[in-house]
Image 1 (spheres, rainbow, N blue to C red):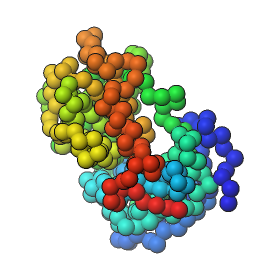
Image 2 (cartoon, one colour):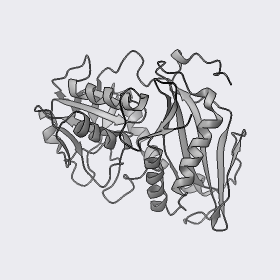
Image 3 (cartoon, rainbow, N blue to C red):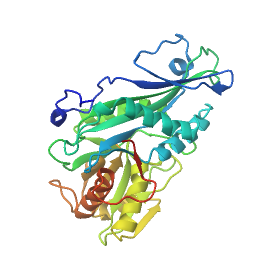
Length: 341
């Protein structure tokens, strides 16, 4: 098979329908065997639990073409583990972790011609998700569920390089202390939409959310974890039970310690400390690391020494090392790379 006729070098970060997707249904207490289908449409009751009470969880990962021509996926077992935890929190039946990885692999294999070539900067984005599908009018969990995986080719998150962004301290709360901030549920992202639109309208690229209880500690943005670098090159990331455990962030901490020989620390980070850091970045699947040049707190500006022109040196090394691991130019830790082809 030949690659699809796509202008890989000019892909945006949006949805493009691919050939196949994986579907499995939960009914009468068990998951069926699952199928690959060309049908991208979903038909369900107007009273489906997902539509009434937002009972849905999801994951996101990428498939890459490596320097030696293999197609690989990065740590899908970690996504499987996180989705299991998300499902449990929303009283949904966990999709078995081994079947999750198998479904991801099948979806990539069936859409292999949509995996962008090495060097294009583009990747195949994989979206596993699950939702309550039967009619529910009283507030309770669904009894039937659907698990699906689709893929779509996407361009690099940053075209022309990752320029430092400006973020603001948000007056909105992302997640309560004992809420659902630690799981990847659709409802968390819905709650962040107004805040991000408002931030954009005010001229900011993103929001910095503080803890809802005291509003003194840094948590995350609507869709990424923070990484800070101290002036003596220690890599620090916030710790909280209402932060989503980012797979990219956890991987970067291993890279910092084991590949770059840096001291790492996961701890509570007070907002009062932010002005003392040398570098700041947002980490996640889409961009790996987005450099932050400035944080604005109600008119008060915190400008990082790394500046607004380019990534700070430690942030750049972290990004280059992790992308090198993903693209096969740097040897990966055992189990990090799932070879598809």
